[in-house]
Length: 396
Image 1: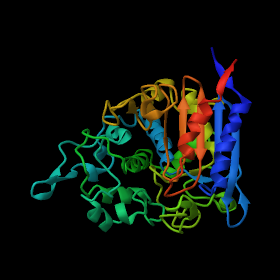
Image 2: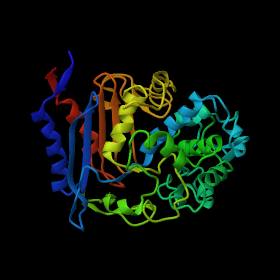
Image 3: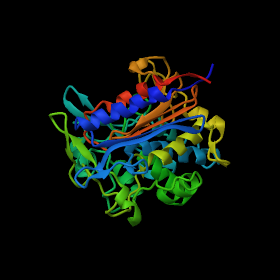
């Protein structure tokens, strides 16, 4: 039996978000739910800019941070499909600086830096098993800060303020020690930014141009950019920060707050965390994946490729309690793992500004939740999936 949504129960999502706004816990949010390619829920609550009394709208633009990784991963796999690279290729084939990398570790006598036991591969980067962190670990943070990365790059992952191409940044990263041997651990960090440089080297295009011509324009994602055009700056939601008393304050300007997505050098295209987008745009991208790689007559990937990306490729390196990690996505492998309500096989991820998404192939669902809060102590985004699934009760 296929289930549809109860309108009455979907209204509980309105209440969840509005209560958080009324308590001063969040400024505002946009939520989107699609089933079988049809929008069943789309709401905006609260404020895009509280000080300016600007209400949140469903077409407001959000910094999606690590949700960028999904587009970059799809872009890499499109090049794999064309035979221009392979998953087992060493990264050094495209960025020679990665031919010999190093790994820092703690020993009885202190910190030691040793050569990596093997070369890092494209697959290692897609699965975050290359041993590359964001450089904020105490073991390497001083070295990374000296190279304008890690603690010197906003919260570690931020490159939008850099007046240099992403490949220049990633070549400098290659000179720094990583924190695990390739293939030994799941380590979240700059891996997808390196993939962005690989895309540039293989395609001969900037990452910005490649994503635009190969993904966002074909899919009709008209509000997805690395840096906003002038006529859309007024739609960019303000970033807020959770305070110690469970309320919020406007986040500062710069890399640890509002960012440089409207004003800045506009040169460094972060494949790991650089895009801004809307709920509708990102929903279209996810619908393409749910459809097996195509949307509205436009094919981005083959169904077999999407199936590969959304199946566990890391064994128990990501989690030993029922979740796995594929080629760019986390995947729910056991019902109820980590307290999650989604169907087994659901895949997704989130962004540093408190946004998140999920794709449930079993129920044919796409979920997108966007807000702008860094750091974030609100649980409203974490509770959103349960409020979606509790409304999935009507036979159809």
